[in-house]
Amino acid sequence: MIHKHTLTIGGLAQAAGVNVETVRYYQRVGMLVQPDKPVQGARRYSAHDVKQIRFIKRAQALGFSLAEVAGLLALGKASACRETQALAQIRLESIQARISDLQKMQTTLELLVKRCNQSDDSTGCPIIEALVNDE
Image 1 (cartoon, rainbow, N blue to C red):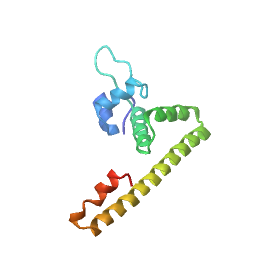
Image 2: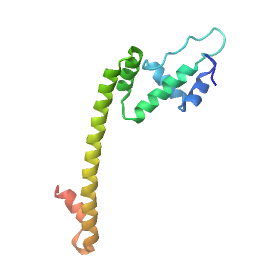
Image 3: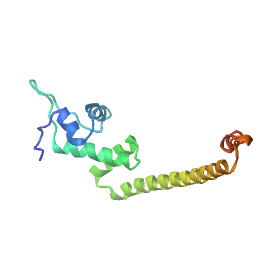
Image 4: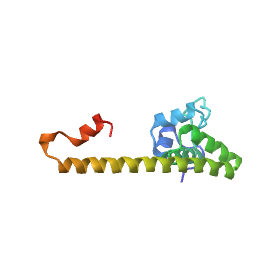
């Protein structure tokens, strides 16, 4: 268990599964508060800071941009579930569109590979021909 404000920046990074430069970047862009530095010693971070970084990383893994994650953090503080749901719905629709695009790409590539397997080497490559001819 991490006690209140006991972690150095290196300990924070390790506990959150990121590198120190990531912690510093989040501080620069305002996504993580930089604690005051004592006259003697190093800045100290808490379990809350670990949770904050893990939240950011999980949101990014779901496809949210850093700007969107900052918005989610603000909404979390405001307990704004409806607004958070709306952002998640937009992200979901974006992912569904990307999946659809990827499925179309998969189908096209499968057809091109099949053509390649059915042709002989003397007629040229069907994949290259399709790309040249904008098929």
